[in-house]
Image (cartoon, rainbow, N blue to C red):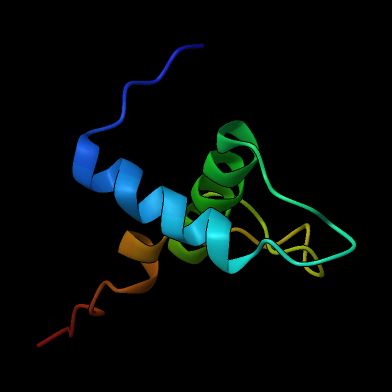
Length: 71
C-alpha cells in the first residue's frame, strides 16, 4: 500500500519520530510511525481491541450513543 501524506501531517509525523528516538529502540521509520499512529487511533476509536482486552471491541460511535428513553 502507498500512502501520500500532506506536508503539515508529515511535519507532525517527523516530530512524533523525533520524540521517540531514544536508545535502545533507535529511530523509527516512517512506516513504523504511521503504523503506531493508526493503531493507537483505531484502538482509541474502538475499531481494534486494546492489547490487554482482545475480546472487547466497542466502536466509539456506538459507545457514545445516548440510550433512547421509553415514554
